[in-house]
Image 1 (cartoon, one colour):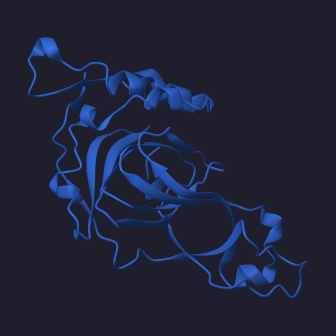
Image 2 (spheres, rainbow, N blue to C red; image 1 turned 30 degrees about the vertical axis):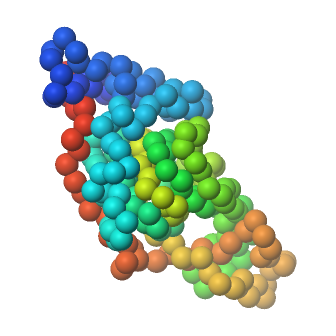
Length: 241
């Protein structure tokens, strides 16, 4: 069933029929998504994908200094997964957000990207007082800079940094494979969060963690200064067979 849902070809319109690129993204994603079903870490599969495979370079207009927007290039989507590329100019920010019930593979194609990610702490640590304040405790999973080339990052529904934010230190391109994709009707809504500047009171519970390694998160609307725009993907195409 999974294999039939992933039956597509990856071709470049500038090449002749005899030069179709049937390997680059096509075969990698087929194997990658098959691995998704068993939660086997497939970093060795996506690590070989490069910016050249998807016709991107740091000197393209998406990555110009002073551009406040983040550009999303949509490659493919079906009910089981979606593929896209986020193009971030220097100092571009993708704010803290979640991936409910999803597994995500992120490959930094070029650039330097600051990543901070969290997983939810154990629910037993949230007291009734804290819940009334709209806060939820999260544990820091990653806090540092990725420099391409680097290994593929993988996050799972309950582990691996399911909530994350990105800040580009230079022009960056991030290939994302989401399985399954966001879908409000299925309960997979993209929710944004703010980090609370102080720990909540906890009058009816034991002392709550508030030291390094933890943060209190609160749901928020999409930040007004976050500008995400779609653009036409000009690289090799993914075509349904």
